[in-house]
Amino acid sequence: MGSLAYIEHYTYEDYKHWEGDWELIFGDVYAMSPAPIKKHQNLNVKIATQLEKYFEDCPNCEVLIEEDYKIGNDTILRPDISVVCDDLNKIYISKAPEIVVEILSPSTARRDESIKFDIYEAEHVKYYILVDATDFKAKIFRHNGEKFIKVGDFFDETYEFSDLKCEAKIDFQRVFKRYR
Image (cartoon, rainbow, N blue to C red; front, side, top):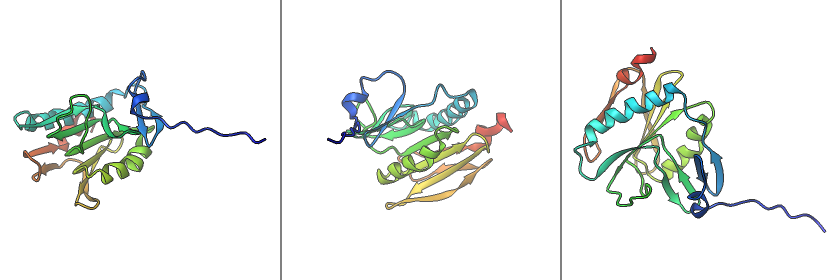
């Protein structure tokens, strides 16, 4: 008699009882890195602060840091920063954000650039921004209704989001200034 191999498939019901920081992707569990290094957190704060300046008076929109985005019963991601509009759920993000920002780290870069990229694209997140904390570069992708199109690489430039519910921009010279 052969042995049976069991593969665990987790759901949101399992996830909400776990301690620590996790992401759940198609039923597979991914441990979040230990607390991010100071540079990662500083870049996160600088970007979120700039976005908050524009969205603080924008009705029905909010800037969130490390909030659960429940895409399905077996997929929960936790973007570094998200801008969410018209989401009435008070527990987690329940609809595609307008903007998702991920600060790349060596332990998460591959997942952010491939698996999560594909998920955010399928969910029609309007803007996906990958911030490279080593090269001090932000890669901005905009969803065109079918897929992400790369807008460009930003080092010292300012990017204006002119097609959102409220006008916003990020000045990457200010974001990376401390580390140049």
